[in-house]
Image (cartoon, rainbow, N blue to C red):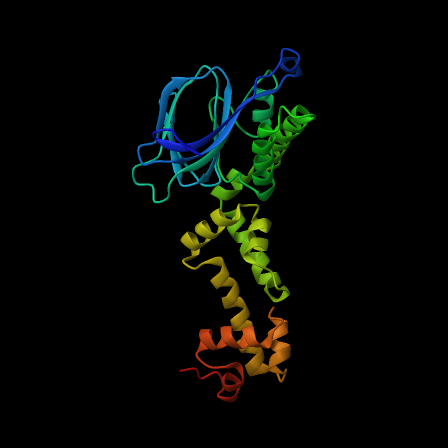
Length: 286
């Protein structure tokens, strides 16, 4: 990425032909950035549609005398003909990282509407899924290869892939406001913690980007999802040690630990006693 004063950025461009502009959707620019503390864009008015995806940190968006603060996993679109301004909040704890796609064509408003965006509400929260992240990476790569044989077709496929992933995620914002994703992921962990699931599996069940999921889970419950998962396993293991005659190796496997060594290490750290001694002393940990 190059230094552009208020940011480090990679800028990618494409110049569509007259024939390509007949398709209803055509690419113009793409890029990614790492903002400096003074990062600010606008006020200005664009003639095209510019989709911005917040990969880390936070951004404050001003449009039509309204203001909204967006964070990791959210995205917004700058609609043509509307004055906008956006900047990194001065109290942001993480540097703002974004990637963007600038497109145009008569199909764009309809594609954005299917994703839940309009001129009145040009943003959506909690939209970054693994699928969308993968499509964005593919789109940026396709911009760099657009002039190679078959490059334009790959670029258009990547753009439609991004819109498809956005449309598939429609409604996630509303679910997130009601914390449905949190309840759903907790139910998932409580039902399947014995099956060697990971935090990534729980985030996928919630339909939320992994890092955003971990951050918000910790904020809402006061404990990281990995620790919550460990708590479920340790409490189940302790119960089996006290109320069953199962060997420790079988208990370890029953709560999701295929190796007795790792189970013993985690259990001892959690309760202060190794499993066999915990059973012998009836759970009277120090």
